[in-house]
Image (cartoon, rainbow, N blue to C red; front, side, top):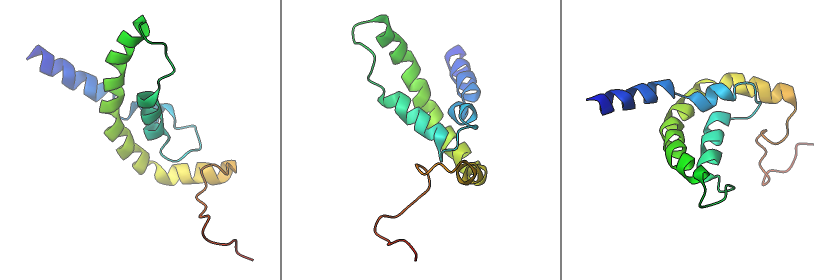
Length: 102
């Protein structure tokens, strides 16, 4: 019973944590991106205590991923305004197969 309660508590505390951390970044689905980048991070050296930390932290990012996706979708109108206001060309969707309008 204690394990179930602890799991539920951790899950509730982590709901869309990555999205909340990246609200100020003008990128679409920035929280989801942060979770995926953290899951794919292989820059740490192997055979160190960092491996033990990764073994504990990475499942938490995996738990947070669906919540971040839902929260990022809910914040999509705000993120659209942020991206357009920032002038950041990286996140503006441009189709390469359509010629520019003249």
